[in-house]
Length: 459
Figure (cartoon, rainbow, N blue to C red):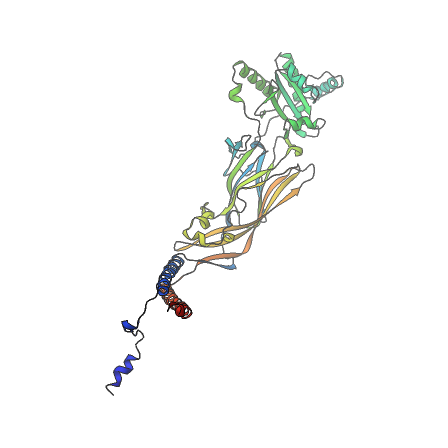
């Protein structure tokens, strides 16, 4: 019995050793050994990389986000609307309806290339312009003079405007529409102003253009609002347009200041490029309910020319962020594991850098969005990010309607939870042993097969 015990124990040896005289090395065996070693190293590197770079799983569940306020960040370039006329408003299903929001909204003027030229200022309430009141006797007298063709302000058309500029190096022109209420209030003041210019022998030609009868001329001059009061020198428009009170005294003061500027050779300092583009940027705090932000051309002192309202625009940014953390929306892109997140789950700003041209008037784009709360692993907790699914649609307006850009969104009832997939160390070690053993065994079988096939040829 004592002699059998070592034999029994010997049969349990998994690592039996062959005598050296029974071992034989071959060229094929050497090649297969190096190949096995190379494969093991490659698989080891891939397995280590996979262990160190965790994958991300997404779970869809009912949104339990209790936030009541949502921050909306926007940066939009409008290429053909002056900053003076851009109004930003917000509406939601709770009854909020704010027009011309001024808080945290800024504007920049553009040059003809569409780049930012200078800071226009914060969005502000448009100032009411004062108008001059006229007695019934004055209005009656002007009516009689008009019937007799004795008005001082010259009626201008495409046929005579060049001749008018050639005779008047300095000119002040009123572009109006007969249906415009503000133009109707200005008409007697403008005629009285023209009479004062003549009586005071000011070297200024005063004219007026009916933009309904001569719409081609007004399109050529890019008249966006009625009335537009524009100063000319040598037939060239001197910007910006007149924005002061519409009284005879104010108009005379403006004309005299322009004449003095010419005499002092200061026009170059005052001159502004004639381009109406504007960049609007800022953020709003809105209720976390279906809402929309709209941008439109609007003025409390003008009637907008619907025929010249072109809302071609580029969206530089339109995103949703956690109140107080405006850059939280970038969390999906800057975290170390961001490469593991599918691109389809990084849609925090899908409208960014999109260009929306309108090639005809009475058109504007409406952007529809579904906002989805997304919880992203961040340090030892999770950060809240808002992802967005967006579609844009070109809307056709009626001829007399002023088009507007709309950003419309509602909140998804579902939320996405992104979680890092944990992998334990023993799983990694097990995979390494599997790589070593599997590679050794597989290459060993292939080696035996090759030797069995080619051994007769080797000997």
